[in-house]
Length: 291
Image (cartoon, rainbow, N blue to C red; front, side, top):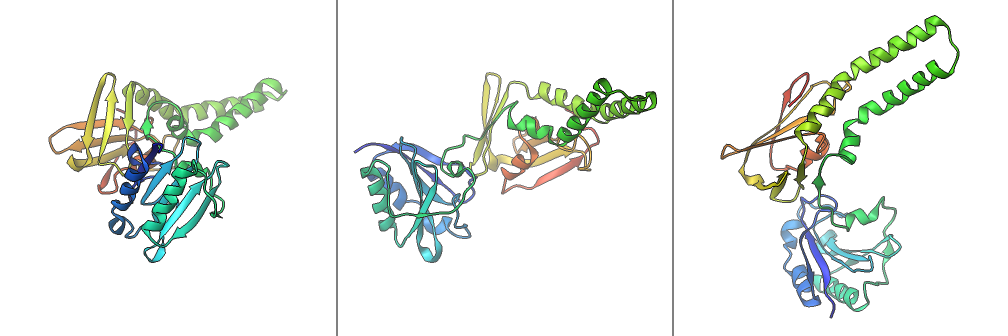
């Protein structure tokens, strides 16, 4: 029988975070299901798509996830080829195992499931996200989140200055307004280049449910254990009502004296805070959090 990729998701995992990812035959997949610590993991777990679970994926793009349900039962979630989610309950692990067997035998095609309901980007709950953060992309977009509207307004007024006739006083007013806007956002521009230089060649792999994280700096790659962390601080300006509110410096200190430091240009603050559920994160307030 064919080998299919199977993987597990624990209670602390984020959406798209999976562990023990490997190709397994049916027997080993069933063993993975039966040996999963259901009683421990289902405690306080929500009945939803991202949950303590065992997931099997077929090369054709379909997925079957077994998660907890109410009253000691189990939920079966099936992501079909049309990218819609279907579900049904299973009373026992044996019933769930039989559904996995059908998934293997029927080439990833299952029937007798009910429509789960609307889910935004449902595949994100089944596909594996490596949680790799580097310069550029979504992190940079989030860094400039507060500046987008002001930039659009500035471009609008700049267009008025050059393409519409106006009085000298109106033109002078717009010039002063644009200059003041540029000055108010100059700290953000400075911190962007400061952070970009500091985080150059860095690549961070960090997820909530993993016991470790990896930081690559150029050709050097180091794995850090979360259990060895002594202190986590986030340096930034206290007020959220300023152009550089999203500028943060993260510092992780370890019990052996090692430290790692990176910025919100590499990973947004809201993502960083979510990665350490068992640690207290301290704030350090600084008007201009440069590195």
